[in-house]
Length: 225
Image (cartoon, rainbow, N blue to C red; front, side, top):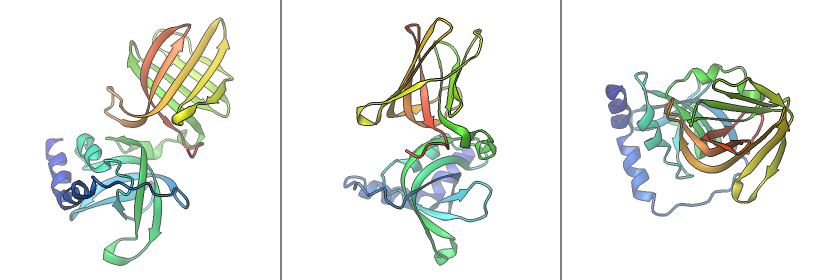
């Protein structure tokens, strides 16, 4: 793992230097014309490249959103030297420099050491996924079919839910069933899953009859926030 991380870091050293130089003057680009896409990040000859899942095309990445994606990817990269990435940005087709195009990256939703998420058949059906290990293992999946809650040593719960949009990009999901009051709050803040090392876009707090659970969350493919 240390070898892979060193390789990625060395390959991207010129790009990292450039990011540090301009990080003090961030801009707020318009999201018009931007696309959400999943794929793999890798380093090559001083460039950060993005390869969409199931494709051979490669896009040179420019971090216009100052997301810190380079540093985050270097922190979790495994032996493959690649990182799964769910990103949003402006894709442009171009054959210059041996690339198939460029991406002006605006934000990332999730980064993972394993690239197996490219083959996740359920991702496009998900509205939101939240999970954690505090105080015990739990997972909540929301989709158009309802809310599914799993907790360690507890029966699985699958019920309809209500979503409420809150200020500052926060939102809540809630439901009452089988004598349980379930509430989930998520907020746009960097969060690291301690079980997998995955870096996700939101923090999450789940309460089941006032019992708190904490973890991370990200929007699924059925949502394009």
